Figure (cartoon, rainbow, N blue to C red):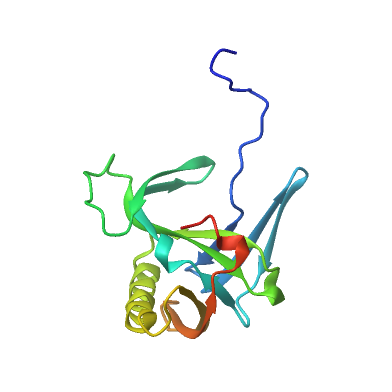
Length: 168
């Protein structure tokens, strides 16, 4: 084992949060050694979102296969798509409200309506950033339109939670 890798060592992944476009619902995906549990946390959704650590890039999702994400920090130069199956997307780290577990999760999507909604949220973040130096936004879901495009807003600003200290 000259490289120091262990075939049995677990790899640390952040648990995921999913915005399910067809239903317009936030789903907290909890994986355990015995299975997966899905919790709908759409009602009263709130999270501290690390807008300073947004990653964008090419993503490929498929049923029964590992996601393939080729990401870089927001503002970087976009490379060529690795394949025609890869779509533009984003990944962000957030901490859920205590009402929904309080855990740090990752949220990623390639859905156009979600990306449009998150782009509008990012504009709101940029507009409020100078008045809230060093703070992160508390993002809430205000609703969704007929196409299940989410409508987010910033409900407040907080100091970076210790759980998000390593995400930026």
